[in-house]
Amino acid sequence: LEVPGTTKTLFMVIDNASKKIVKRYEFDFGQHDSGVLLQAGPMQVIGVIAQRSSEDGDNGALLLKLDLETGELLLKKHLEGKVFNGPSRWDFRKIDQRFCPGPDGCGWLFIDNHLTRIHPDGTVEKLQELKQTGQLFFIGDDLYIYNGGRDVFGGFAGVLRIKGVFAEM
Image (cartoon, rainbow, N blue to C red; front, side, top):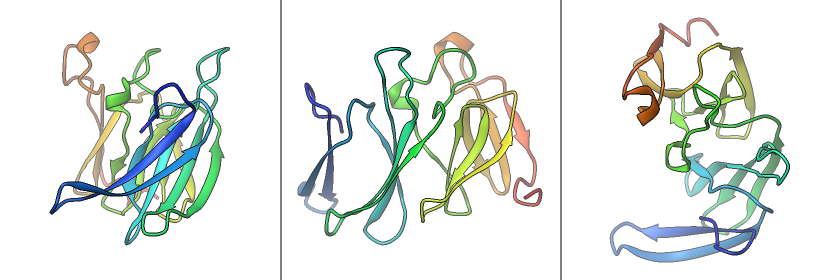
């Protein structure tokens, strides 16, 4: 979460049974958008935080890996390019910026026009540059790219299917 009025990011661990915050970790990563998280092992998460600059609004992103038990930042890596790139010149709203969890345990997203997967160990693998970007989801080994259901595009439309995406790697 962004801490309003600061450049700080707050990670909170919530116990599902009691619905209470059991741990809080605060970091200062500079000016950024709220990040997205994906499980990367027992009590570990990996996340991407889009960074902003005052000139053009895009300054790459940070890839982070955090141990939720100790609060230790296990990985901090700068990513070049626009993360969560949408199907047009407009980005996805913050609420729509998320990893697509793949059946391979990786987080899938677009960086610029490159279909990219981020492995739980922090390896970033740019797989292929595509003309169509958007939201992602899997059904089995088939990957679907769609416009994200934005109001501008009239809902769920512009669907591209890549059959057997893992067979081609």
